[in-house]
Image 1 (cartoon, helix red, strand yellow):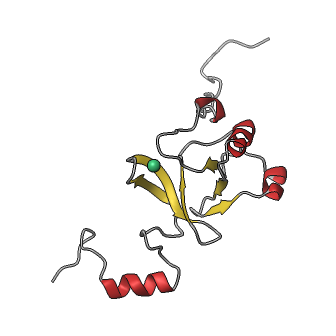
Image 2 (cartoon, rainbow, N blue to C red):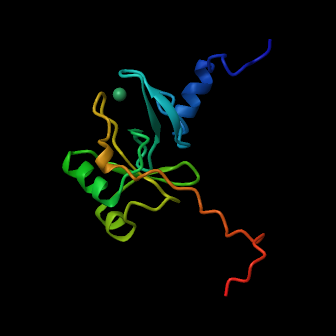
Length: 141
Ligand SMILES: [Zn+2]
């Protein structure tokens, strides 16, 4: 018998991984990734956070003001680290590591059918400007 990625996980393996906290009952892992939220079919970044809870976030990077607006809206926020871990933002992390760092995007709690307003989102990153051409033969002075 050949095992493929579409083969369901054997029940004994799922139970063992759940008991060890490697995966949640819904199949999330500590490596956050793009998942479809089944109730609303929205694309989310989901995983088990640093407190061991299933976490569903909107995949929109927040600005510092956007994070404040999300918190005032009653949404929790998380840091998404390069190693795909989600850590819950606290008053200390909000104060000392404000949102807006491209190396560690801040994401807000997903709410079905309530996407993050564009005014909360970081603008798209601009590509670096091309270096000045060195093919110009004229003296600049
Ligand atoms: Zn949803």
